[in-house]
Image (cartoon, rainbow, N blue to C red; front, top):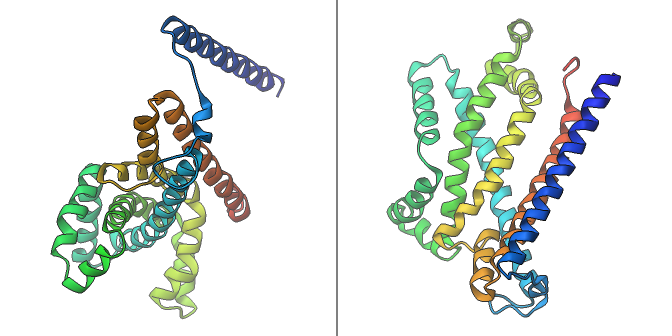
Length: 270
């Protein structure tokens, strides 16, 4: 116990030393190149939105949260469906689910975003396409790409969780007269979700950070507005630092709530 405390103290001291060293190097580099920082730009009026540049960043944060929340819900639903299908006794279903996972996991997310935005939307039935064009089609293309891409990873996580549930519980449930869907919904999946909550949380974090790619098709989320502020103010360090801090706070918030949920739903003995 004492040895662990000493190791932790040494690790903290090293971390602090690295932070101080990095700060000194950055400050020296700025001084050598006559670079000054001006954080007051965030209090100045923004031509991009109503209010200040800080307001502009907050609007971007809200859209990032919206993209992430919708994407997480859809990715979880799709991932669960595909993960269960991967274990289906029907070879056609399991192979189709396997092909889904391999295809979307092994193609770049940015390519998928462009595919949904410039390809899929244009071949949809007219009523759906017209509705999308009235409701930010680029945003829905990003949501579709994030959901499908992340679901291919979640599917494998769910599959592993289902496999981790002891077969004896499934057999006991069937012996009590429960059908296959009842066994899956009431016995297997609740335990599987509890077992794989930490890796699921990692996928939720990845989806939130991957939403920054939406800026590549003009979706005005956090990273998009960060680049716009840089262009208007010529303050690259300040704008990108603000964007970085915003993503960090989003990630820490998600991690905080996931840790609370993990402690609340933790399986006994794990």
